[in-house]
Length: 342
Image (cartoon, rainbow, N blue to C red; front, side, top):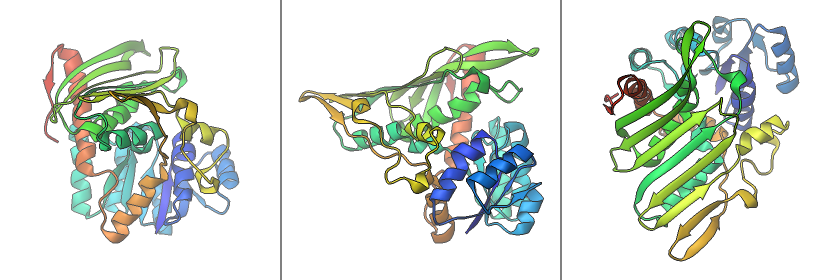
């Protein structure tokens, strides 16, 4: 099947193209970018893949699906246009700034009879995949509560538009991770860190309390201005606890110039950074599972070609947006918020 990529900034170059290239089920039909510098990078990184000036030019060339990897403010129009012209669509997260906008895009996909899904790639982070395996093994017993931290010392990548902010950036990832582990959120407590930027306010950090319908409580947080980088996952259960501080191993290897299509092994953490499972039997290190974002694209192909479940269902993406809306409302009102059904 043919897939096209709209946008060739950091997202398109580092988080989409390498993993599409690693999924042999797809043929890359082209990339939309007008930048001469990025077109030169495309020639180097994907020889033979054509560059197009616009989404319509790409669609005219013939594609089964398109990936939108452009700034959030441009996403709505691109998704609607691609759906209207008969393409399936993968949208970067968050695929809309609010639940009302997300529902509009979901309705458009249903009306067009096309698939709309969201690139929640961090479901395939090495640390999350390893943690999921530990939970599924039953070694922790009944999970009670969890802490998920995703701090990045990266203030230069904060976006400060009216529909931007860290909650819609890293928050869309870490909230989705918690929901994948422990199920939908019923009630929510949120605190956002605010900064005045260019005459407006933007959230630059957050600490969120998710009360899952399953009974698990998860505390998730992130910052890009704390001058620290940390990935931490801790889960407490009736039989013990699990804790990990793995690196962002896939991103590290991409930045080192490696690519999953050419790697014998991908997304595995070094042994000295494996997570630790603590139970009555003592402590033991849990071997790293293999994280691989290309699993999203392989799963998408299976869904479109074979009717398999989507790797990220639209109802799941809508629920994540509903939780992010609840976070802003909780912060503004200073109290717990019931999460609206998506």
